[in-house]
Amino acid sequence: MISLKVNGKRYEVDVSDDTPLLWVIRENLGLTGTKYGCGIAQCGACTLHVDGRAVRSCVTPVSAATGKEIVTIEGLSSDGSHPVQRAWIEEDVPQCGYCHSGQIMSAAALLSVNPKPSDADIDEAMSGNICRCGTYQRIRRAIHRAAAIMAQGGRK
Image 1: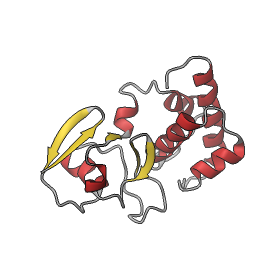
Image 2: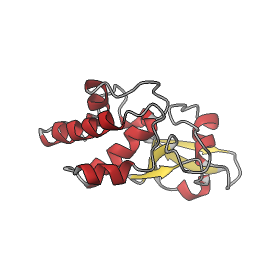
Image 3: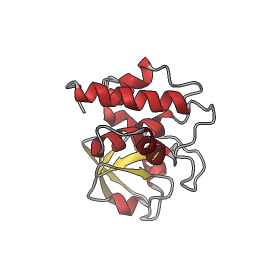
Image 4: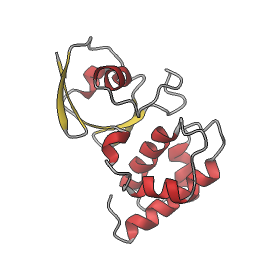
């Protein structure tokens, strides 16, 4: 049995140590907001936070997350009130929406360490996330908007 803390809740799962964290989150815990994209950590759809860092869960063995704080898109906020989620809506970012949980999680991780990122900072932090619909300009605007919301006292 492996013990995990996901979105503030403790879970015990009976899986092999080398099972990708993505599959444990989706299949064992039923949290399907984190998406499977490529399986080789190249697209970013599976991004979640482990101890506050953006991590590609498709290549992270569950054993690497034991004893750490895991946050999925469902745990970022229960009602969509996180500044990044609000900015995503205000900037009308999603098209198909498939990549956006990973995009949002990467953006939230960026803003947690760099509350006022430049375009270059955003481009670098988001370079591992692919949007097949090409909404990159809206994504950048949304990250700047989220930073402004946070600077004005919006919750982190």
